[in-house]
Image (tube, rainbow, N blue to C red; front, side, top):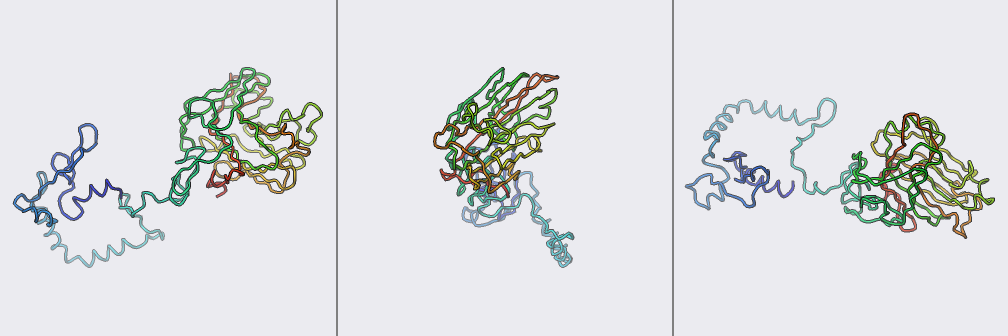
Length: 408
């Protein structure tokens, strides 16, 4: 029970005064400001017996008369009913005992919705909700903003190597440096969230669009980050409308890239140790129908994970934790909406001969659209992304801080 509830119930807990008083006021005599539903400040004491002294008024818990509109004989009627029902006391007790027992299916009856909560219930952390409670349970993208985590009942800032929430109404990254690459008619803009939901209540998101054409591109990138022997946690949200691919004849379409390019790709570089070649390394691309592949491309531990573009959620949240190494000690685990999509351990995650000493292949990460496609009734491909983040485990950020329910 909160303070307001305790105050309002104080006038009726011990007495038999009706719950409402004259003029629509409650038992404390407080009314509401017209048209607002808000009560004026202060209390007015309603006297239940004008002839009683102040001492008696303070001590007596029952009323000797009812306020206008009440029943003056209410106490008498109640007493008569009590006397008349005395013969049935044992039967009533049996009925009460039966009603207090579990129901036939073994489930105990639930208390009414308006039952008083125990002290501290307003601040207790309830598992499997989005509350940030005192025991640290909660959901990073619910009560806590992107870039924060729930700790000891409060949202605290996480050390992000890169963060872009777009809540400032611009494409400027909150932390780190963004790189925007629009080519051949591709474009992007920060817009009011057209699909607000429990899965993403952001005010603003990034809208990405590419027209029909060859190598059309609209990608939003992080800065390059030191890669070799580093563990990063990548987070992003995405939304596709159900008619996303209707009327589009797609030759190829890429949604995300972990780029090492140029990385010597065009001067006898590393294509022979990257599965499927190329200098972009890991990526997410359309495969067939409404399926796409999430491609981990370090030879010989290639792994192409196929999944649907859509889920039952309005927005999907992805979390990828990956240890980048060209030894056999690497690992990665990818979650979607807290559920594990894929996990690999004891694998290479970087290609052989990765030039860690030069930094020329340090990765930068991009989300958006990069495609070659023909118009067969659709003038543009459009997707929305939001809350891009990269966390560095060397900065003390662990997966449960970013995604408390991942894998639960």
